[in-house]
Amino acid sequence: MKPELDLFASLKSLVSKIITPELNAWGVGDMSGEISLERPAMAEHGDLSLNIAMAAASRAGKPPRQLAEELLHALETDDRFGDLCSDVSIAGPGFINIFIADKALAEAVTGSLARGDDFGRGIPAGKRRILLEYVSANPTGPLHAGHARYAAYGDSLHRIISFAGDSVKTEFYINDYGSQMELFGRSLAARYAQALGADAELPEDAYKGEYLVAIAERIAADDGDRWLSTVLPEPGEEAVGHFSTTGSRLILEDIRVNLERFRVSFDSWFSEASLYENDHLGDVIRRLEASGDVYHKDGAIWLRTTRQGDDKDRVLVRKSGEPTYFASDIVYHQEKLSRGFDHLINIWGADHHGYVQRMKAAFSALAEDPGKLEIIIGQLVNVLEMGEKQQMSKRAGKMVTLEELLDSIGVDAARFFLVDRSHDSTLDLDLEKAKLKSEENPVYYVQYAHARICSILRKAAEDRVDSSPCKTTVLQPQERNLVLKLLEFPGIIQTAAATRGPHRLTAYMRELAAVFHVFYHKCPVLRAEPDQVSFRMDLCRLTGNTIRIALGLVGVSAPESM
Image (cartoon, rainbow, N blue to C red; front, side):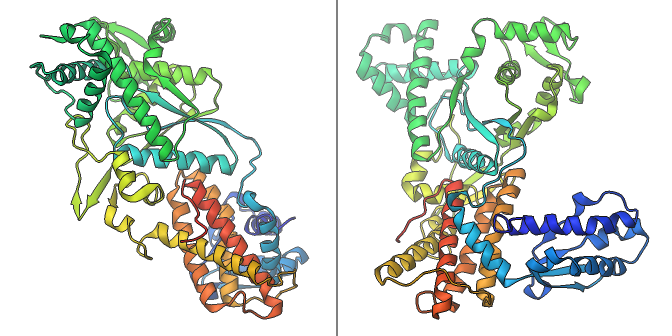
């Protein structure tokens, strides 16, 4: 056993090995999956708490405290447990409270520090190949703050799941096919004519944002009046196609630039329009027809999604011959599966909640395990400026763009704030709070802790402080608290990856920064006693490394001075 790699995990494994024979003796069955060690809220309740006695009591037919006493005896008489723990006791109805030995904590710091950038990194038994798709905005306008939330969340999830041990590829699905692209092309054609001084009316429900005027002026500057005769009085099919293609290309260029600025990059960009090349839709429909899941009715082609629990069957191809968005999504997911991924994760907006069941039904119709498809529904973000909510409509042209957001509060604050709340909760992004240089701003608070540590280490180097290894085995309460908080990090990574929750990481960083600041004020580092300096400097190094790694996993920088 190597407790320095992950002391908590090692201790949990050891406890399980020790108490499992006792559990078997009670005839309660396999409870290995229910054995957990939790950090109690109060320090007097131990460093870790075990509640398996209460969980097993009903099966064993004995009082939980009696079972806890038997488990306690098994733990106390095991030499391996004694090497790691200084005390173990029973509290309340049957909690077993465990106190870890100072020596074991000190050794864990040394071992964790030696892992460098790999501290907290997971190594699962079998690495899965995952395709993570997110943002996937229509190329009909700039990214707004809502897209920014999905971008920050998706990219952070990519980093965290990869760090936890899986192989993850990312993809942006370009929705460049269908009626919205035709409307976009008509809207841009009218703006182009207006840019050349012609009297052209926007189509009904047109895209009206000022960004469209700017794009039209760029096209007019490049092409002159070459297209003018084709857009008046109404744009023809060729003109609509030209303005749709040209406009979406320019918008995609802008999207790529702003995402890169936001520290978000994708392994691939997949065009929806490419799905309609080489009859991919026909191939999928024929496959579904062969399985009996497709039927024809009222001139349209339908998929029997009710077979899989959907509330009604869904149209794949309208009687006009135009495929639905649902058809595109089925073909797209079939294409994803053909690339050999073990698991697909989609991050969708709040307005897609009702779409989940039919997509799962389509997976089943494709003879695929619906469990291979994971759909995460994100919630809305409200941008607050001077306490007033800003609007988010791309079609109406009223929105806070990603570019404006970054200009206002910067990349670090935007990235941190946008993942600091669970994705399934509405987020209020207060721009004024994000600009504060104080403890009220969580990203500033965490970054300041890292900068302070860098300052300590620079000062130590300048003063040539002796930091040779020492054999400190007695820790102060503030040192113990900091070590224990640091050793939570590997478990936090695994939890954040498993629950798809980057917000767990930002919460942990705030807690770690708070514990470090208490340590800093109560335990002098450079002015410590000779036998304490080395260990406290190691504590600073490990804290700095952990903060830097954690910030990096949510796309935030770790400044060395502020």
